[in-house]
Length: 107
Length: 127
Image (cartoon, rainbow over all chains, first blue to last red):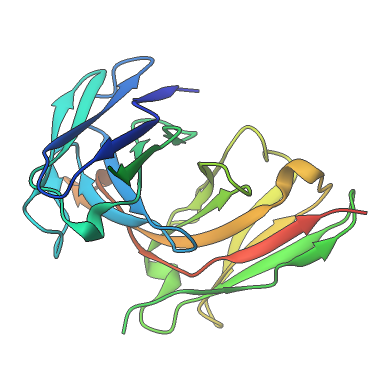
């Protein structure tokens, strides 16, 4: 199975900051990667698909990039609603695999 | 409204079996790709299984041979039959709709992610 390694595992930031979360695949996965946001006690929410395509209804301050093995999720100008845990998911091959998550906390 | 609603979770003894259900009032389960994802207490997300609209199924290595994904088109419901359960299967189980695209007759050709999720159903395996 393809291993997905996210970094950092946790991150403290302030409202208005720009933050970047990275995800590295154990082998090349083209651009077959999505990003999900999860808040405590809630279901995950799709943010980005195909590495860089913004899901409908997701604010434009979220962006994704990367291809092959290295990917990033960037949140420009953090808002209070953005403090959550973020996961990447490779959909290149089965079994699909998530990264271990990055918890974004308020500084 | 497009939504999915899971049910069937509960407390089950190790070695037991349980069937989870996922109803989808706002769309046709049989025309979509549908997944199960789980989350153990305090842990991250784990992809479990998917069923294609054509019926193909795929599983995580951790559940292969023990879990079976299926659907009943007449009830517009997705299922996850789980057997030989152990404590490691304790988790919230989410049902989700996968969005795919086709090209040149090949499906899936594009994958757009899991766009509709339920609230989850909790499975606790304990004696």
